[in-house]
Image (cartoon, rainbow, N blue to C red; front, top):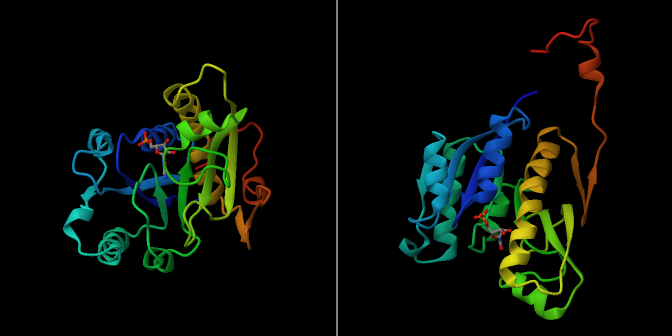
Length: 221
Ligand code: GAR
């Protein structure tokens, strides 16, 4: 199976980036990270990328006159690296239609709430304040809206009586680290079909594997 070429966009800590790196290094994700892009010079995500020998690019939004000009540069960088799937991993800039047109159905985002509840920012405190009993995370394809695109996978966690924004964020983050690599793997396997608002997950096509079946089992290359 060919590896999907990922361009990962970060703004901060990059723990989701790390979870994707770890899965790839464990041989459990059919993807390669061809570039990590940050809009923040101090993002720890860039340090993580460097530690793993990944290509890095800084596209500082402050150096651009408009969101479109910033996005045009992002698209240039991603296309120059032959990116097939754009992965927003704690990327805290709103993207414009320009990006979506360049990568139709090929931009994913992770959001720390059960969309469509609690889009936007400050979502951990909002979940605690609202008194919901369950929170979670959502991986979705990106469309023109904010956190509105077709949903690929969600994970649920309880919201406990003594939770603060911090304790809830930590509980949700653990699930983010499981769900994002899983969503990317489904994409890599060609199993995600966008039908309007819905994402259908197609069954795994084993016919190719069966052609290589041996007894005793030998590693498939
Ligand atoms: C994650 O919780 C992610 O869901 C959230 O920012 C955090 C980034 O953490 N993203 C958003 O809120 C996007 N609107 P990380 O840098 O450690 O991956």
